[in-house]
Amino acid sequence: MKKFKIVLVGGGSTWTPGILKSLTNHKETFPLDQIVLYDVDEERQSIVAQAGEIQFREESPETKFIYTTDKEIAFKDKDFILCQMRTGGYPMRLKDEQIPMSLGVIGQETCGPGGFAYGMRSIRDMIELVNDVRTYSPEAWIINYTNPAAIVADALSLVFPEDKKILNICDQPVNLLRSYGRLMEVDEKIWEPVYFGLNHFGWFTHLYDKDGNDYVPLIREKISKNGFIPVDAEQRDKSWLDTYGMVKDILDDFPDYLPNTYLQYYLYPEYKYHKMDPINTRAVEVMKGREKRVFEECAAIVAANTTKDSKLVHNDAHGDMIVEVAESIAHNRNKIFIVILKNDGLIANVSDSAMVEVAATLGKNGPRAFGVGEVSTFYKGLIENQFAYERLTVEAYLEGSYKKALMALTLNRTVIDAKKARKVLDALIEANQGYWPALK
Image (cartoon, rainbow, N blue to C red; front, side, top):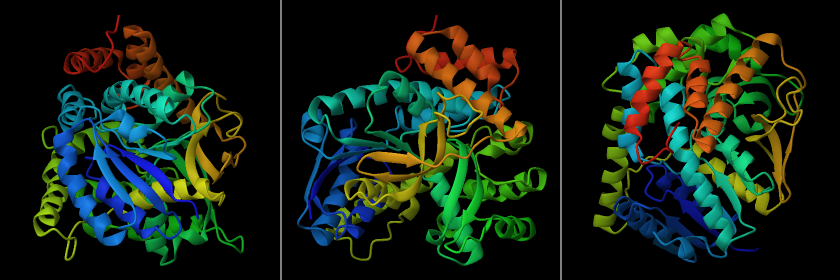
C-alpha cells in the first residue's frame, strides 16, 4: 500500500493533537511516509510538535515526523495538505467577539460581524497558502478546515476557479451526526444523510438506515422531549452545551428539519445577544479552557518523554473527519461526507455560484454530490440572504470596497440595521489594520 506525505498547516493549533491521534489510529488504512507540521508561529507550534513527535515515535515510528516554518520544506512533493489556520490567533478572535458586543450586536467566531472580520483575515492567508502549495506540489489535495469556511470557500472558488483539488469541509455536521447517534444509542455510521444549506447554515432533512428507515422524525421527537447534548458533552465547555441546548428551541419553531446549531445566532439574534457575556466571550472560555488544557498536557508529555498516562483530550469528530476524507480520496473509497461545493443546481432554486454544503461521495476524482432539488420559500430566503452576505464579504476583500463591506454587514441577520453595521464596520477596520486590505 502506498505511503503518503502530508502536511498539517496550523501545527500549533489546539486541534492538532486530535488530528495526529487520528492519523496514528488510521495508520493501517492510511499509512504515512511523512507528516509535516507547518505554522508561521514557531514558538506556539514547538510544544505541540514536540508532543506529537513523541506520540509518533511510540505509535507510528515508521513515519518521518517533521515540524517547520519553512514553506519549501513543508509543501514540496506532498500528497495532502490538511489546513486549519487561524489568522490573528485568539487575540484577534477576542476582538471579533468583544467589539460587536460592545456595539449591540452578537459577537461570535464565525457568525455575524465576528465571522466577517475573521473571514476578511482568512482570505488573504488562504490565497497565499494555495499559491505556495501549487508552487511546490501542483497535484496535492488541499483539504481545508479554516474558518469561516463558507467565506473562505467562496473566495477560493472565485480566485482559483480551475483548481479542482481544493476541498472545504467542516466537522460540525459530523459532530451533529455523532450526537444524534448518542441520543438514539446507535452508531451514526448506519445513516445515509441528506443535508442542504451553507456552512454553519444548514439542515438534515433525512437520515436513512440501510433498510430505508428515516430517523429524523424519531430524533426530532426525542430532542423535543429530552433536549440535546453533544456526543462529547463531558469534555465540552459550558457555551457548547448551551449551543446544543438551543436546538430544541429551533425545532419548536421550525420542526421541518434538524438544524445546524449555528442557526440559533441568525434565527434569534436579539435573544442570543442578551444571553451572551460581552466580556467573557467564548474566546476567553477557550483560552482559559481547551487552550490551557492542551498546552499543559503537551508540556507534560514532553517533560515525561512519553504519552503514557496522557490526559490529552481529543475531539474525535474533528480529527477523524479530515483524515477519513483524505483516506477516501486516496483509496477511491467513495464514502459519503458532507462537504462544501459550488451549487451548480444541487439546490435547484438557489444561485448556482453559491458554495453550498451537501452530502457527496469522495474518491480519487473528487466529490460527486447528491442534489436535493428545490427547497421551500423560507429556507430559500434564508440561504439566499446568507449567500448574498458571504459573496459581498468576499467582493469587499477582493475589491477593497467599503461599500460592499457595509452592504454585507447590513444584510447579515445578526445585524440588520445599517447604522449599527457602519459603527461595527468602522470599529473592525480599526482593529484589523495590517490584516485587511484598505477599504475605500
